[in-house]
Length: 156
Image 1 (cartoon, one colour):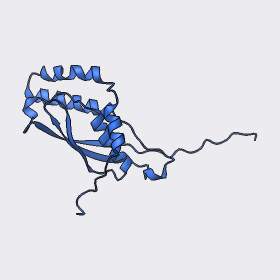
Image 2 (cartoon, helix red, strand yellow):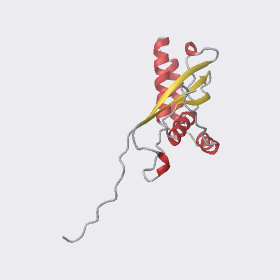
Image 3 (cartoon, one colour):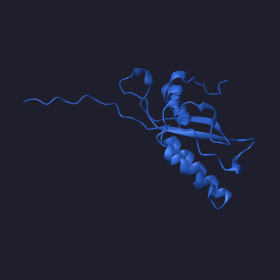
Image 4 (cartoon, one colour):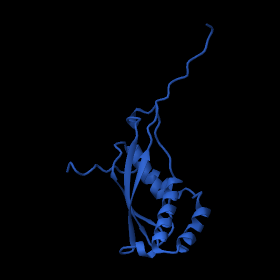
């Protein structure tokens, strides 16, 4: 079992809070399906849909790390990969962190970002396989610098 990354559970309260929060991008997402549907070719429709999905997920981005919190782990760069499926109406199904960042807070943040982005624009019909579009989203967290206390200025 050494080849399988250990999956971390997301605190239910955090997931529910993220899903219940009002979607500030609601107005922008309403126009996304129309632009996807207006594409000239199936390839263009798929490209536009993937761009709209990426934009909605990026809009939910946040970094839960606190440099003063020793439970967060190293301050270096980290990446988690969230796998999920999107149904025909844009709902996210079965999100799962399959490749852990090694930091439970960052894994939870990656999954919450994906869930908070829904509803996604409905996918183009040609992308659906058995009613779903399988997806994998890498979420990159940048390296951070440990903050130091400012030096006190005094008489010289």
